[in-house]
Image (tube, rainbow over all chains, first blue to last red; front, side, top):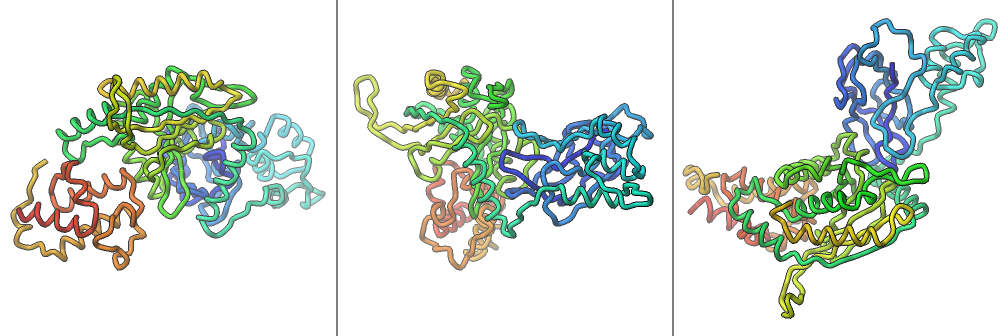
Length: 390
Length: 94
């Protein structure tokens, strides 16, 4: 048995609302399948299961209330377990959990179970203690002869739950979430910044020729090229892709590129394009389009919220020539793209008007030095000069 | 992708009908849009804060609504509401 808890969908999430259950007790649940819809400060998220099994019990019905990250929501019987399996001996909370911060409540350990053997406690209360992962030592019994009842457990759990501030307005909450994540980034991450100007003439000419042959439904935006080139350049400098965790670099084999998408009315999200280095440009473009539409509709999947191993921001869309970003913790780097502008550019001794792009890298100096960061930007430039190979 | 419209459009689509469909396509991208506040000759990108993905999706919306393919070279003709209506009228009327 595992407990499905309120997932932590990004470094800036502290609480979520359970909007709806997509599965009911008795339903089979496959790994990656959507179990519930969770509202965060930013968007509605389809929360996916991390295990395959059967939804055994729902602990919290969907309702309009902020539940702290780690709140047990349901119990899943993992495939292979018998239907009458004993109650979770050591309920392991699972859920789409952000790679950094532990989203799990304190585990109900064997110790807790042993401790309860010496306590007068009702079976229902015992079960609840294990589900919630509480320390039974702190419970006071109000039942007959000081017996601990289910009500006692619920009361203690309500007190123990950290207070959650829930400003009514989503805009305000999103601002607070961004403020918390960015403050943490600036406090904890020693950023270094690098920039380079990339001649985009070849890439744009290739794109123009390619798009001219294609119907509108199959056209590429320059953004797709930039994402693919970034993902391939990260293969060459892998220590920029992953997380800073437990005081060291945790490189990620997979390259899941978070794309900063501004939301209409303010705020932003940076959901993942999974395995961006392994998609061809058409597939990447299709996914980028789908992701943008869903982000703007405030509907994303939990894996998209928790999986990015690096982030790209393209403020060039808003007209600025360069952007020096703040790393989204616990990631290791943020790549910024400015607007593609025509500038005088020297090619083979001649001054020509060329479309150029300023690409920047914000790197975590704990993880990498400027030297490695520079190699990344050089690789990015080189890859963009051969767009047909992207 | 067949350029050019089903013939029936020629007879039935008035300028107002085209305009309504263009605004509907815009509203899909920018739901907060208030048609009353949309200046017909001012740039849509600035008025509605559209990025390149928004604009592509808008063009796709026009493609679906009117059955016309829109070459990239024509995007600049879609810069304003008036421009869009004139462009669509020419394409489906032609």
